[in-house]
Length: 67
Image (tube, rainbow, N blue to C red; front, side):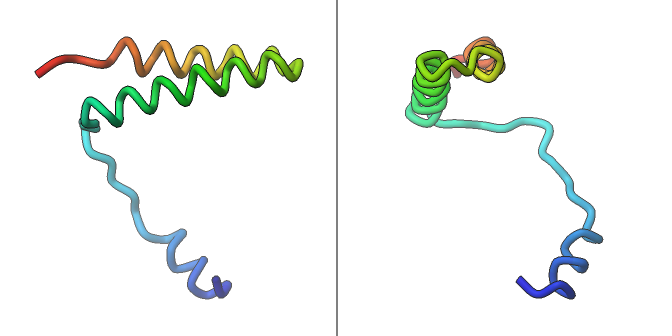
């Protein structure tokens, strides 16, 4: 990306939706990926990073609701 384009992108305000909706499959894959990443990090001796991944998993899992 050209520097001029990068500067223009940095000036554009970002707006986030108040709610993010995942399908059941997407939510399952998100939790599965977090759990797998945590295990991999633990096996490789990266305990701090594994703990952060576990916290992300717990956050995602705690926010899953049925509709």
